[in-house]
Length: 594
Image (cartoon, rainbow, N blue to C red; front, side):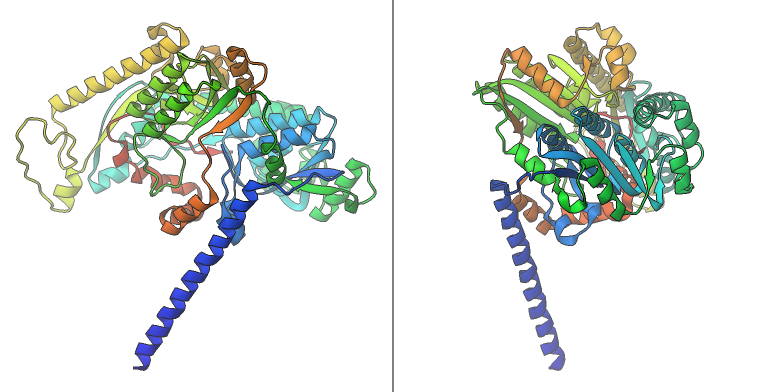
């Protein structure tokens, strides 16, 4: 009986705790929703914008009540949109005198995102305002940003990571051989190496060539920028990168001009006070990116009834949502197509800017989105702004635009098609002893069944299907870029290019930011004033709370945090089956060490 009451009490206490937690989270949710309706922060005199370099930077900001509640900076997800809005507002706001950047647990971002922020920082300094940077640990990405500062300070026991750029490709062939799975691949494109990890144990020569090329071009952009800001030659920066700076004494950092001062964090406040020409740190105020971006976002973006719609297409391109396991943004073909239809039919929308940050995915979904881009183009101007990536399917949905912008370090191109069909007969039959007998009414009724390999006839049919897909893809690109299809094929073959190189070969029109794309859209639409409206609407705190309570998304976030860079290995293996069929995707999951 005692045990019975013990279990009953434990159950009651458990229910009580669950209810209490849900209630607390609901309160946080309601508070967050309320805060979105009104911005209470004000810019005070003698203010400094504080940019905390921690967590990761995504294309758009999302409310994350759990990061704040748990106090876990690793879960912090900042939005590029908020950071840029805050810097731009700080540049124009007379009460903001400077920026303070603090390098913390910064997971980093792709090169194009970092380059965009750095350009905004450089533009901010042109107003005669200062930037001070401090860090206990400068990751390479954080140092790239902070090197734009007027004064770079490192903790006496701090470190700076400055060792060059690397890209890693993970190969699974030997693993698949051991478990008895054969990936049956059909593809077009010498450089279309998305399938290589499942067929080879090391890089092909073609893949190594393209990786070395864009790594070298991106690193050159980084070293040029740091060289200009710090007054260190590019040759010297490469020499330092080869000397294991991560494990050097801070006195070396100062000697080599990577930093200006060596000091503890409490001394930084006085440095800022000196830059502001005030007596003490008590004489200036601080404001966060979130608060200043909130003020900027609530100001009218133009006073005209004309609208320039900025549509964010971010993530893998899929036909149906697949994020029940992977808490990542997706470009769902059906959803995006409907959204673009509405923008095409809205007479108030005078032009559309399609902001693309995608490594591609489903060729079918890409074609459907391309079709909607063409429908918009028939009615009004559409301009593409490429973010970190607009490659393969990401380029497919971009190529029809009237004008295309990219950052110099944008990853684009990868014009190629592949299909991947797993054959698990070795695992099922030989290793597990599971055997199948199939009865079918027609010859190809069991096409793609993982329990058997392709026949020669099936492989030939699949290859023809992929060839047709490549012909269509290259025609879309040729028509959109007003080039010959044969010329597109020469720079296609699945090869990845940087934005800098893509401009030289005609895949993009101009190097520039999202703001430049918006101005171009206004010019093409022949409107001087326009309201800038962002689509689709961001997920509310309440929506996220419901998703978190369902468990899978929160569990996946924790898995990402636990596995770190190795999470992508798990995601690759998990998504193999989802990659069946025709795909227009990057040649591999990019793993930049930056």
